[in-house]
Amino acid sequence: MRRIFCLLTVLAVGLEAMAQRISREEYIVNYKGFAVGQMERFGIPASITMAQALLESDNGNSRLAREGNNHFGIKCRDWTGATITHTDDRADECFRKYDGPEQSYTDHSEFLDNSPRYNFLFELDPFDYRGWAEGLRQAGYATDPNYGQALIRIIEENKLFELDRGANLTYEALTETENPFAVEAPAVSVQPVGALIDADAYQVSIDPATGLSLGKNNGVPYMIVRQGDSFASLARDLRINYSSLLRYNDLATAIPLHDGDAIYINKKKKRSEDGSILHAVHEGETMHSISQKYGIRLSNLYRLNRMTPGQSIRKGQQIRLR
Image 1 (cartoon, rainbow, N blue to C red):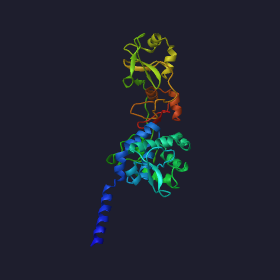
Image 2 (cartoon, helix red, strand yellow; image 1 turned 60 degrees about the vertical axis):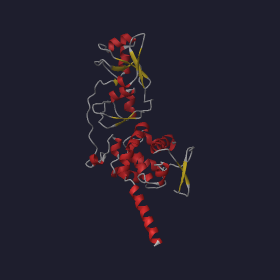
Image 3 (tube, rainbow, N blue to C red; image 1 turned 135 degrees about the horizontal axis):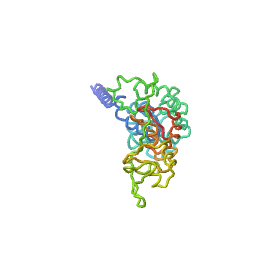
Image 4 (cartoon, rainbow, N blue to C red; image 1 turned 30 degrees about the vertical axis):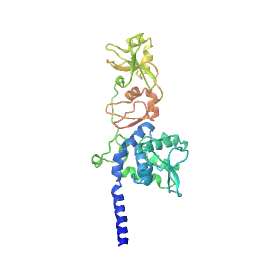
């Protein structure tokens, strides 16, 4: 009788543990925001981050994930924070322990970003999840010789490549979505527009000497256009060479200005210096408007993305900013 009771107890505990397990789909929906946030901050494809988390944490069900919030299996090397012991390649190895899953995601990104052996990955196309997957294997992230293929399989089976392109990745919406890498999608032609940075997004101050509204973006000074202003009048008021003012804003000829527009009054930077790494293209944006938005020279923006000047971009495309 006692033996039967013990067996029933073990069975009940096992069933409870199974009921508490989360599915792969639930994990993706719950944690996709962390993966996308790391992509925007560090430039690591969200598909790669999510695939690694799924693989390393058993969809969030591993002991390391549940008890240590460690979703990537990162060990204690050069770590001064809390730890948790776990048997992996050897018995009772030391692993990093975090206060929450978001800290684990951030530490994973910093781990890749700060390790020289992973530097070559950040030179890859931001959509090249296959290159990232195989590169992680080559760099020795895991001892499994099939690690890269395992990541690729997870990404393609769960359409994680959609995260890299800004999709919300709800499974109802993705059931009819095709892999964009199966057949190369035609580029969408976007006509250049004279869009300038949104002044409302940045703090400005009034210059008491000129009465002009001035601000800085990516460390580059700009001014807010007033009704009736033109490039010629602004060049005169600011005592800036007219052609230089056009060049600062990557324009060959003057365009009409509108009240509230913002134009740069000094050279833009060669890359983003305020922490921004990637920009997902919105409908109607051009490389020029993106260069204005982030205070990056247009020629450098093309160069950062290995594009030829004038090359079109499409909605959802990821543009490197540094």
